[in-house]
Length: 126
Image (cartoon, rainbow, N blue to C red):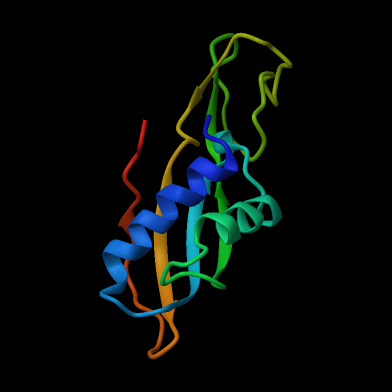
């Protein structure tokens, strides 16, 4: 699990690589539920790490991506939008959580142009 500052730094790195010197207005980011970040806390952290950069003043729109919860007891598979440890079908606790730790930059809006399309994976830093 990464904290908001770690996630914000990874987003800033991806933005700097993509911006080509242009100033960033907004970034749309998809983050897995297991990262446990909220849009409010992420934007606070991002404001600090982006100070003095081409993304200073930019806003991050966060879309939470669910994890997949697989129950070893009953076989139920479900999307988990919170870090569950209990099966939604049988209340069993022998569950496996798959995914939900992804982070990628979906789109960027620059001050001088329309939003850039196409997802970009955000590199992990430790």
